[in-house]
Image (tube, one colour):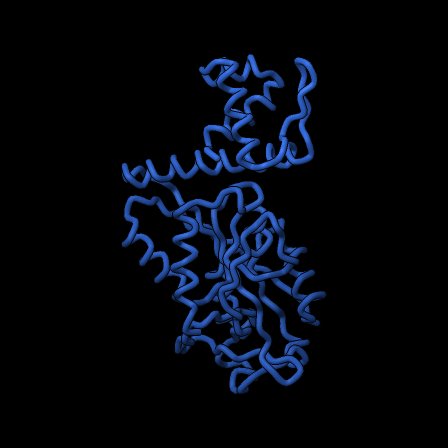
Length: 296
């Protein structure tokens, strides 16, 4: 079975005519008929049911048409990517990450990836979970590092990376700063600082309140830097998740493990990208990202 034969078959189906398909493929009508017959013989089933000058797709033909078309698109994509790699063509890779991510692993992964593929133009985009999800949906991002908040979708590659440990950042002079760990109950009367755009404030509050069980009031910062300044000013605490990075020592705030039911709260972190947009550079970045968390 050759890609050329699949192309002939798909073209015949889409043109609904052997004659028009032959013209489009620049071969004779008899040749395209012979190639499709050879394809059917190779597979061992009939793809087209012929009646006089008309034809109809069999169930097998219907299946083969849709998946054959996907295969042709994939082959064309591989061809184009191979050309780009061989010519060192500039390709942009748009990487999204959670705006409260607190660690150096992602920075190292990006540095390692760029060292290996300096021809790639890397664009870094931060946002909350919904920002990243919408960025993938609308093809504004190629791959994102995010937490899992909904059931995995078959439309996406959902690559598990690591379970992140939940902490809070709180001012050094806060009464909770000396505790070995805190619970959600400990935080009831302290403002929770979240990083979110105005459009996503309700979504973030709903997740922390109704999914994670934070029973407190919320205030919002537009950036991680603004949120950290609010923590330093002792306006409240900021929930963060460390995914394998060593905690940094700071004289400005404390990082305290967040516990529930006697153990530290953990969240599932994954790399996500749309299956239909999969290419060599996305998979290579994901591979380096995955390897960076193997020791965690």
